[in-house]
View 1: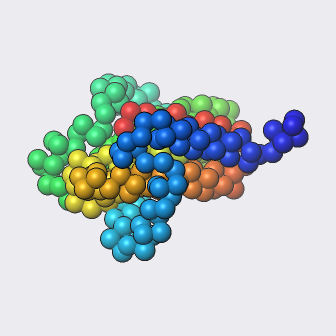
View 2 (view 1 turned 60 degrees about the vertical axis):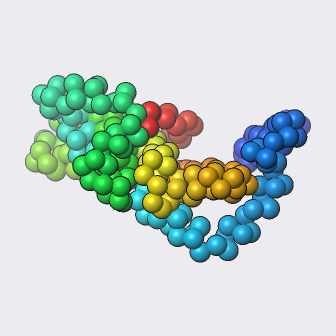
View 3 (view 1 turned 30 degrees about the horizontal axis):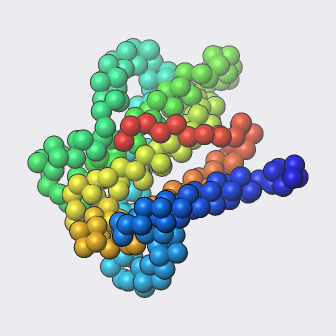
Length: 260
């Protein structure tokens, strides 16, 4: 038994199996159409996969998520690194971050819709806001933790300030930055679905609510499973990327999820 417990893939499989068993037991105990069992939900997957509308909605969601995540990185990484290396800039930005961090970013969706409408731009902008904050925080923490001796040595070798920032600070802070990026992926997925539930035009969130309106409960739960699988796949893929980039750093065991 101890040998089985040490298998790396066994604990996640046991957790998933336990969750499915609890789900099926709850379905049998409640006996409502609004809580279909695991077999009924899984039976809905073939029709979903063959439906072009489902594929289009998933593709729309992933496109928004990728664009929003990339835009957030382009904005947040420079800000976080500059905050970590400049106390003046950090004092300037900290009050703004402290005010905006506790606010659920999905709550901004109605306001943004008034400004920009209900199209892709509104949903993507909410993802940018939600992802930027954890990335800024971790980039700031990573840049601030860089040892001054490394910067002194680089300066003694004739490196300019921008060169030290790119060739010393960024590589040294990269493990912490990647922690923020991993958290950002989870938040991007959550915010993506939530924004699509509020502004219902296309996407996974729109598909979930449309299925709920028509009492297609198996489809609702099947799409929730799809969201969970997407989260697992993205997290595994990112962890492999992290290992390839900074395999020498301590592995990241948990992801802290900020309010989305």
